[in-house]
Image 1 (cartoon, rainbow, N blue to C red):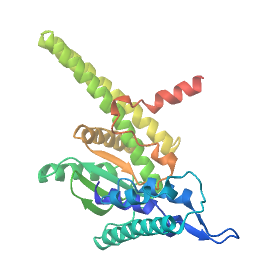
Image 2 (cartoon, rainbow, N blue to C red):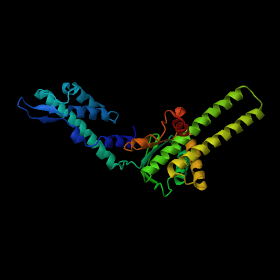
Image 3 (spheres, rainbow, N blue to C red):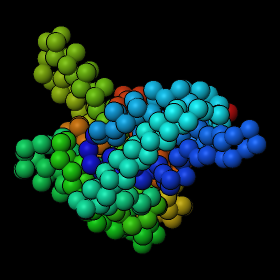
Image 4 (spheres, one colour):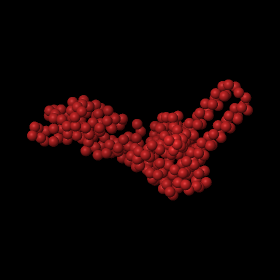
Length: 300
């Protein structure tokens, strides 16, 4: 897991102290409370680097293994559970402090994360970064969107770029561009398969050229339709030819980034309706145009 994702996961845990087990005095003796919150907390901690040994220690406690939110535990079990939970909490807090010291900033709902698969290839990273900059410049800097561009951090591995882009509207716009680009990407891949099949049949070059031209026209038409749909969704009925061309260009540029393995994601705390504007980058072949869905819904 990269540092940005770890930071997001820790931030999403919320107030850790409120998730720890507590003791309540009763006439029959002390009882351990908050066990349901502790179980949920442990589940959300999975995947954080270096945490597994702390989780195992908590899970081995019989009190944790119960499904009850409150239990009366013997002093030894209670002490072991509180000690294990406290060590888990302290580890997470220490890791959070370490990430803060490194300058890994907490994300906001106006942030996005971009992954470039260009490790060790500086010219390729520079080219893809410039493409991303052009996409954002041509779309989210519109006054109605209120977008901006600030690099918060860059993480290594497959390079992860943490960007603040100014507004939740800008995040949604980027997600919609990525979705439309995924639609175009899918059509492009389908066309490539057709071309490969035709080439395998050893059909004349003239026929192959006609197929390629037809595929290019189809892609152009798909980009046009997706761009018009996006402009209407985001800016309403107001038509602006220059803006439409910028959106079309942004979709094609994003499609090129997708072909190179790039991904764009919203921050974890982005509203669910905004997250749903982004495609599933592990299932790009299953992405369907939202124009089709709207037409089907209207018809139904």
